[in-house]
Image (cartoon, rainbow, N blue to C red; front, side, top):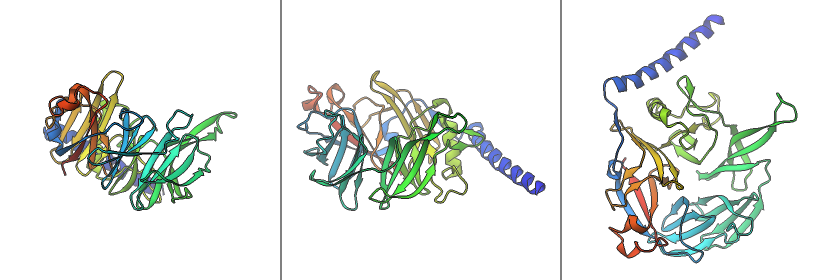
Length: 358
């Protein structure tokens, strides 16, 4: 028994040691290229501009969670779920009563692209279903002991969610801990499977030190959680380890579906990408690793837009759970060269959609 344990430990150490050697070998042989500047054409083959109308409730700002279903484009902006077509024409606003002005706001939303419905979760933990015309179909309170839903996704006919729950701290009576879990749910929010989230590891240390989840995404291994950059200095090494493993590092070796890990990057077919944008100081940090060219972009000011000359892009947002398409929003002087008719009005932004190289 003891010899078997020693042998198993030796094998594990050899595997991780070999992975670390591969990472260092990439550095040593100068195979890996590290760039501190880059252009959008380095990672994308096409950029499509969509000049947006001004909705009845005001211009699109603070954009997040941009999703597409055919000719339908949805943007969450200042707690407004805005519906456009793919030419930028404003169609309607979904869940108008969840606009933030009455103490209610949209916490998360997903598109059921099979049945063409929008599923909206508000801050009072109600799940409401709307058709694309904005008609309410169903609404019910989420009967779960969750304190907060941190991410929501629709994939393969199921809802997936990460949520925080307060649990008693057995080590310190009278206090509580925050437990973070990944859930697989049916369309009525009934639990099918759940798994406690832990800090994923790469090699011999933690990938990062936060359990914050920004998005739920998908790769060939299944569902995984993405958390924005927490330690940029370690991001390249972490990403190289993930790329070399060619699979999600599992949280539990006996996990039922092999799911539940957290990535510090969004994992696409070819690119591993993470962005951190700070709208208060108008700058951010962009990281991208091209697994085909073995090139890492570590950019303090983002990629330069060499398609539409809008300056540098510091806030690339994923539009789909497979990370094939990204987008960014520009307005005012940034779009003056290609859209001069919109340059004098910051309320007339242009959404740019990128299709990454494969």
